[in-house]
View 1 (cartoon, rainbow, N blue to C red):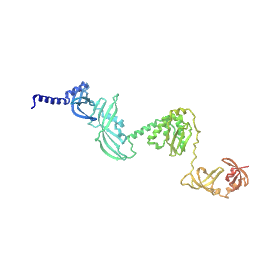
View 2 (cartoon, rainbow, N blue to C red):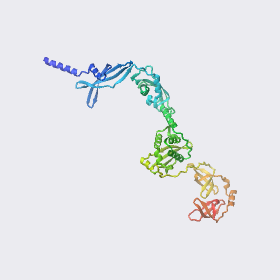
View 3 (tube, rainbow, N blue to C red):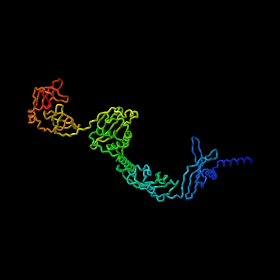
Length: 507
């Protein structure tokens, strides 16, 4: 049997347990809110429980949402939305924290929709975000739906829904046209004008209008902007004369080196742009990324370049389409690469090592290891065909020959037959030049040969001097064809040589 005393103790324990586990009352919550919000009308809203884990320990919370509102003299009501949390400790709840506070202004005048659309169109890349890089075709059509609600967080910040219709490249082969809806937040600056946009596309609200094939001629808004920006940058460079037509790669390389040595950065940059190869550009005036990098590298370090290189630097190495110049100390070098393009030579790359400050200090103002001015003249390329008569150049004179055939593997190599003696051989065209001699005048026994023989004042057995590249060498005439004389040299070890009487000197 339970005594009255035990029954009373049991009831007291149950009541105490219920009270100690009871969640904060509305009065307790309001009292806590008033500690932070002294004025304004408090409205308690829904409540909920949640929990979070830290390691092996669980924490339990009670949340109560609320709002505090107050109307000013202009009739604008400021509503602050927040929440307050209590954490459960040993069977009781204690104040923990406030939720993030958001503010709403009621009674604000809606902004002018036309002004907003105008602002968006003037700042499309900011408004459209990543989509801006892929939009093609006509400009986006932006609007604000008729039933849009404007939510003011402050007199300088408002959030609402906006709509944009545009065609976007969605793959390498397809363009999609659709209506897109954006949760849009805009801000005013100190001058009271809109100056910033935050817009996020609302998931699930996009409405596809149609799709079509994509082709590379379709420029995105970003590409159009980049092209305008690049063109403006080039237009802002100082005026410089157009480069000459370069007949060789070396003419181009020395020309650019001269400009880099002579001009300030902007003028030097203008000269560089004038000679860049087509492959240097992404599209229009936009440089490819790696080209922009090396152009910037040398222009931004132009003074060190001018301090450490000679006007006519020594050549480290060269080959078709490339050359490397040593610096004054011959410790570092710069490499130029070019390509033949549309009848001239164009620049592909300058590979430049930026010198250390110590090297700059050592070489600035010093002559260093410089070279003389190079001869950049280019021999005119002559095209030969079968049957042409050419003069073959030897140290002892020129000999007429007829081109019989052309090497199919090397376009500068020909099979020729000498008109005087009918001998044939393969030769490169740098050993001969066009001839005005007619083929028939060189046949053995023709009037021409008889004339030459009549004019000759040398005979077999004469001791003569022969003009050669090495000077005059002495020898004896041992045979004659009329137009040519065979010389036996006085010095041993030299092979007998045929020569023309015009190359002989009487001794």
